[in-house]
Amino acid sequence: MALRAKIILELQKQNTSQALIADVMAATEIELARFATSIDESEYSLGEWIEALHAFSSWEVEQQRTILLVSKIEYLNCCIQGGTQAGKLQPLVDVWQGYVDKFGVASSTR
Image 1 (tube, helix red, strand yellow):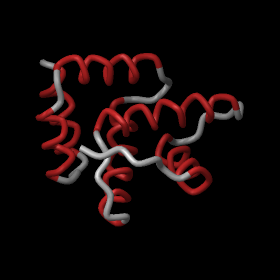
Image 2: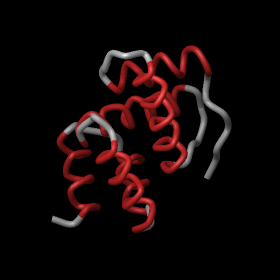
Image 3: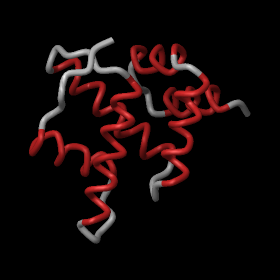
């Protein structure tokens, strides 16, 4: 199965927003390949990444912000690197929430 289709299937399975699905549809092959590399290099599954991206997208709407998909993925990578240093693997969505609460999110618009 093609990478884009696999990601979209997981997005639909988790009932994520149409905006996040549209972001994946609009992503370049290079961006999707980088996303796949991020998943492969982490201890988190595609489903856990999607859950965190969904939470990020919901937060983005609540905050009336617009953040590029690639920036969300980079932010999650930073969360993982910092979370790994803590010594205990926590759910990615929890690690993300902790980082947002503590550090916020820099502007990154479309």
